[in-house]
Length: 118
Length: 115
Image (tube, rainbow over all chains, first blue to last red; front, side):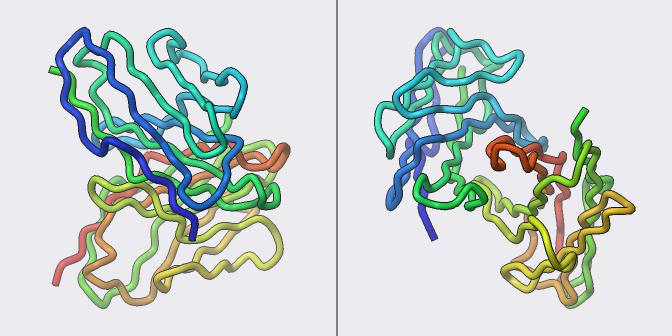
């Protein structure tokens, strides 16, 4: 099946710094990617929809200036957590759908990136 | 509001025993339905999905799920559990209109398997 890769898989940073997480579709093109946040022992919450070549669509309650999303190519979306604070510590997961598949094609998930802000 | 309920937060079964994980959804119309599995520190893997047709859906790793419209349920089953099945299982729904971009996940059920 198609592969979605995230990098880094694990990052620790100091409070106040910014962290960038990459999401790549390795063997397919994705016009749309999705970013989720997962707190410990909780479900995934959709943060935003990343659209190639246009602005991301954020879910209600998600700060656009805090979580910057860029989808510059058909295989790469990035999530930048700006001025990170300890409460931003979480597991961030991206997903993507093959642009060449039908509307009911499968969503493929990355392996996740664990962010710890000290 | 759209919601997905997984009533069981944690389930423990013995290896070789049968398994059923419950999922109920609240939605205006029948949505697309999914079950995903997540191993510790990993992303999600699709086990199976229901779009239409036969209400009994076969998935990978020996899992199946049955859609029951009257009960708004989509329970996941496996006749004989293996130790490697220990993981977190998420039920998810998505609206049919506009594709299934927007997945709504349940809280998850953590499965432990005793040898």
